[in-house]
Image (cartoon, rainbow, N blue to C red; front, side):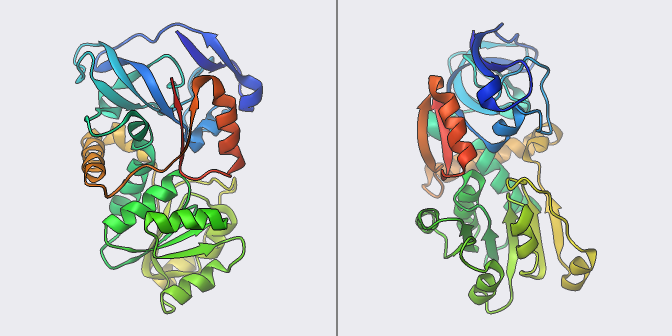
Length: 325
């Protein structure tokens, strides 16, 4: 088979090459999937640099999320030949002609879900579903502040926040992105490049602050929003797209009776696969009901992967970028 492979760690422009490599071998509880569409995620930029939390042995293939057709099944696989399946590979491997789908981290795709939707659903919406519902304990009537709100996980968090009955404040970095946030259902928007996030949150909440803050950015934005958390509020840490891991003073936690919790969605798939599957099925139902829909910025062909990676790196996009065969 062919795949986008890197033999050493480095910037994608320097290390990614379209090469022939062996087709993966199917093990017990696994299926071989012929790739149809791959969704790019922020970790893909880190994987090629060796900076992601999970590292595959070199030479390796990026891509953590994809959908395709089952062409081979191992003993005990839950999949059937010919059916569509979407899979998550924590260390990468989907930017290839074929990838492996394991029972714990892959699911059948129902007929009402398109290939592009399926490719863009699991990671961002799974992350936001777990982050808001399980870790953030978001309740109806509460105020949710979403940072990086026009991005993949951010746009998912806006839609799911409304599903869960929250008032959603969306923070993004341009007028175009704020328009997208409004269309997704955000009740209030903040341009964090031009406006004081803390003051705007207090203005929107009559001084109380946000009950849940959803943060995939970290860095300077975290330093700001830790000052606008409501009594017994929760900050949910998703990642550090800004490049800097921030910190918080423990006395702030005490004085506000607040919590800071982390979410690594992928770990649930191995530690509690039943919970991961229940989440995926719930997302399919919400998609069928028209309550959520992955925000797709652009679809590229496999040959144009470097251009798609450059777009992700530029932070100029909103929603998701999908690569199709």
